[in-house]
Length: 112
Length: 112
Image 1 (cartoon, rainbow over the protein chains, first blue to last red):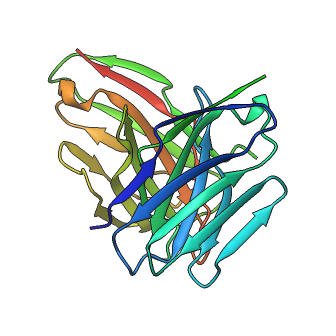
Image 2 (tube, rainbow over the protein chains, first blue to last red):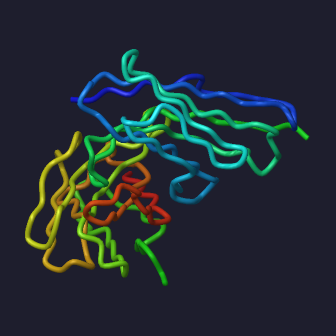
């Protein structure tokens, strides 16, 4: 089955700096890669996603890049704000919204 | 619009007891799934369903049963709880043809 690895497990940045979280996956058939943000005591919430036919996608301060050849994808958050502090999960899926393989999460702390 | 609703939010069980975690969605989504979240391990898929009457196993199905008699409901049953099932459980739903999964708020289960 699919194996998704995520790094780093914890990340601290100063407010206004950028944060980068990286994930690798093992199954070349995976073609959908979402990123979820989880705040304390809540369920994960989708913040951005990318499909395998796209190399990069941006939404305001958040961007995701995908390298299918190397089987890795990354989340980039620019101009970080304290409200960006949360746990972020990457995931991989075989073209379905039903079966996700998640990374182990990155706890991001933005220091004011 | 309630989205995905999980009950209860917290539960303590004794080893060997049984219980059902409830999950309901009001978005008419075909796909529903259950994940467990453990520290350092991300979210792992337990069982999933692609429609009423259809269920299948995920990564970690042992010790759990599911059924899907209606589109809206997808209960998760623990027949004989074990301490290894102490975890936070998340239910998710998604629409066929789409990709975004919507998560509930989670059920924190402790088995003593």
